Amino acid sequence: MVSETPSEPRFSCSECKLRKVKCDRTTPSCVRCIRNGDVCHYPTVRRRNAPGMGLPSRPKISDLESRLAELEGKLRTQDHGQASRSSELPQTPESLGGGSNSSSSMAWTGRLEQLPAREQVDELTDIYFAKIHYTAPILHPVRYRASLYQPPHMQPPMCLQYTVMTLAANVSSAYIAEPFYRRARKYLEADEMMDDGYNITVPHIQAWILLSHFEAQQLWFSRASISVSRAVRIMQMLGLHALDAPHGPTQRTLLPPRDWCELEERRRTFWAGFMTDRGTSATTGWPVLINAHQIQTRLPASDEDYLAGVSTEPAPQSFQDALSNGGTERSSFACRIIAMHLFHECIDSNHSNPLLPSFSALDAEPFWMRFASLDQGIATAFATMPAHLCCPENMHDNDAIVVNLQLYTSTICLYRAATSRVNLASEDDADALPRLPIDANERVQIAAQQITTILAMAMDIHTRFRNPFTAFAAFMAAFVFIKRDHESGTRSNMDKVNALMDMMVTIGSENAMTASLALAHELMKTGLDPLAMNKVCYCRVVSLLAYGLMADEDQVYGLMSMMDQHVPLLGKESEKDGAVVFCPMEKRFGKTTH
Image (cartoon, rainbow, N blue to C red; front, top):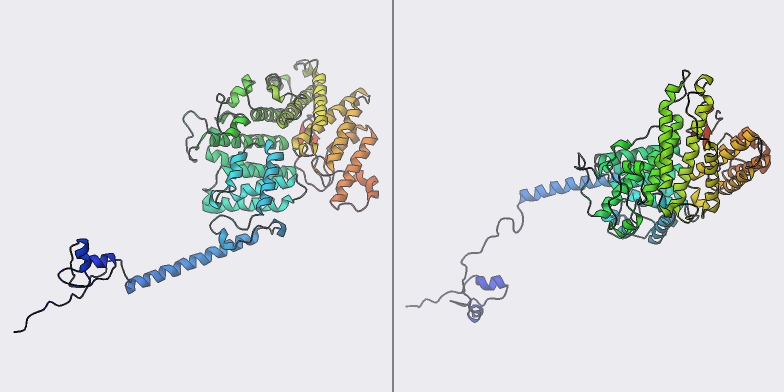
């Protein structure tokens, strides 16, 4: 009889297979399991793969192939769309090109082309914060610079980056601002059309506001007005006008701020839009877009607290409290907001309640009530002005210069409107009209003298005159001097007019705003000082030669017949009511009417 011997197991034991080591397949236990003290078990059948493991079935392969083809089709469509959008962008000179990264590195970053080189971006950013930032201090210098080194999806939107570079290039002789400007607008419009506009954020508001400042400096007033309108409507959509409302905004469209610094940035963005809206309305005579009675956002805090990122002072005032009570604890930015509001109201008083044929003292009562309120508001602003903003003691401070220029210009505009009311009233109503202060003419003369002193002592006058309101202040001061000498029949103020003319002629060769011919028109109408007219002629010839509009300096004598062409008037007086229109919306070419 033959003895039965156990056959060798077909498969390795479970423990060796789990450890992925070789099994000697000895029975009843392998040597490794005996050595390790494990229970040795030999499977009798091969274990099948669990569902989802191993090779997929044929139907599943067909489904994956169809999905892959669909995704490839979508990707080709998207690549074609991005190529068409990038072809619409202006070509940037090779000097603005960045590194040698391929186009695949820009995928899904929101970029349609390579940025300029890092060194150039840093240089333009430094120029912006050194020379431009004070005009609209809404960006946090440290946080903005740091964000440029973040991954692309964490950086500021491309529209804001190009806007900052546009403004910086505009004051630098080493760069051309136009390519940056075109790209900034293209990105803004592309973001606006993407996802029904739901991805619009606070940085987009900042870009529209800053871009409107550049457009105004280039005399593109209609385009600047539309940019401001977009910024204001987006601010209202995001609830920036009600950041400090007692119960919060009725419709929350923004996430709560991460910290106090982000809340302050939103406040400053709103007030920068408010100032730009008021300035645009003053320049055109159009109604404002922001109702001051609906504002529930406090005025900005001090620049020191904003830079530090921590509030060390009591909560800022509300806008209504600052107008009625003043207060020396206001920040510099808050004082500029109040000054711009008063400037707009004084300009607006020129256009409100126009003199009708049936004009009477009763009809003029609202005007004189408003006149008294604005006169008191300007006096309160001067009386409660913080010490660090008083001029001429603080001529080194940019905010001090801007605030004082706007308040003195407001004084001139307000009293000129009141004087026009008195002069145009009928004899029957003259006795019933309120009497102007005895020192009204002296107040206007002092305001004009202060404007002249500030401009004469200001540093970096070229950058200063890029602000349209600075040029308008110089125009109004010169007009006061000319009017005073014309009425008195003397020439006692012509040295001051000449000083302003010398300053504006020097700047006018580079700045189209200052080269405007409004002052020349006033000089020609009054017939004062032909030498001053020659200065304007020379400034105009230099400007026309630079732009290729004149071929020969010998045309200077025929220049006076061209004075209405090519450059819009900086300011124009209405012969009916004495209203001054700042930057009137007239065609650049062809004669204007006066």
